[in-house]
Length: 274
Image 1 (spheres, rainbow, N blue to C red):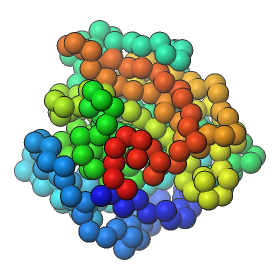
Image 2 (cartoon, helix red, strand yellow; image 1 turned 90 degrees about the vertical axis):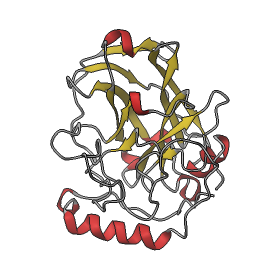
Image 3 (cartoon, rainbow, N blue to C red; image 1 turned 180 degrees about the vertical axis):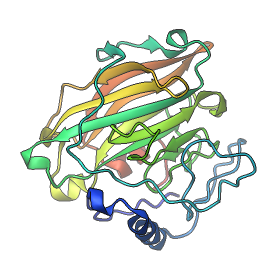
Image 4 (cartoon, helix red, strand yellow; image 1 turned 120 degrees about the horizontal axis):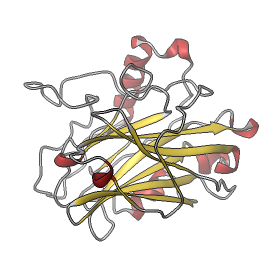
């Protein structure tokens, strides 16, 4: 069972993005977590160390995944987003990433948004659910979010933003090593949620210009970008897109569907015991 702490998380200012604030956030996260959820017995790779921050980016040789490192931190809102450079997709326009970049392995899924006048106090998060052909997670640990930044197979990682080399212009970045994804995973869903949306009546009607883009991690070339155009007041989470297997290829599906479920509701939808 996964324990998702419903805590008040304030967006961090630029002056708060130093080492001390990251250590303090790590301490608060550890105090909120209680125990480790039971595995559902998926035969692939070690499970994550739930009460220790996970490394961002590929793990160096000889380094344990349990080595403590600063957790992902928040960057200030209102910064300029990267200019569009890849193919502009429409909702539902599925595209082969493997054909666009032969040999593609490491990708970065960058996500960003702007906040309107009614959303200046909003705190947005991203998550990735690793799903089987039935649309369910392989086990309770098989999703990545701010409190669990690495998938059990090590293939999907929530990167620290605001540092050189990690797509610093995106609000949030999730990295995927395609060759490392567990064979039981058929697709990975990428989602943007509003923290404490249900408790405080927060919704995507106060969010604008949400986008998702796929960047080739080797060449740093943006392959595709999908800009969401529908931001509704009855929506507090957005499924922005999916990366999925098709025969021998990896493809991207720009979904752009909103839901009234918060992160806990999405976990239940995808089969996580919360």
